Length: 275
Image (cartoon, rainbow, N blue to C red; front, side, top):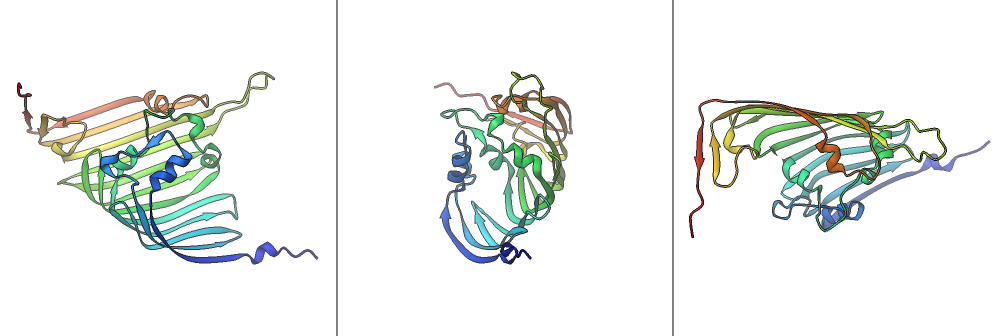
């Protein structure tokens, strides 16, 4: 009779992490990224963390972890029993989506992020569902309250859904689906490795929001105020993509459909003063 001692493995640890920079960790794996300094995205983190592990899973829990200006609580589980599983339920006091997206912008002083920078094997293997709720949220400059973002993934397909959020009398919602499928290999001996099939679709809907908040509408010296309805749908079909292609090119090859309407509005334009 064979006795597998690994089945007895159990581990539990209570940690209190001192202040560290998640940005530094991010730059270790993706040197071409940076966080926008003045927004403080991923600038500092600290707080209590409970780790539980056995042969089937690794679980992270926290009653109140600090990330930048937000307090985070909740649970995340990485499962190993039936493949690569992931599920989480996390609450944040504040979620600044604009700042987090900016944290993955390319750093002009470093090589551009390319397809090979993505953890493609993990993105194809992981499956599960999760939820992030936030007391306040910021997206495209628009501030909202009581936001919820759901994630679902499996078979190389990942979907993020921002449920309708109240924002200054209006609402904002969004959806993003991305595919990281593996392309069929070319059987010819000298064909080389096949690139992944990358594709994505996105939808952003704003109903009756205050145009003064929307970052795309306003620029220094030019301000638009009034109720705004906006619907942006973009998609980039699945295409075999070489590992050396820049991620920015994958995003820019999308075709977009934009619909917008404004109620009674006011345009404030401030001309530059002569010296």
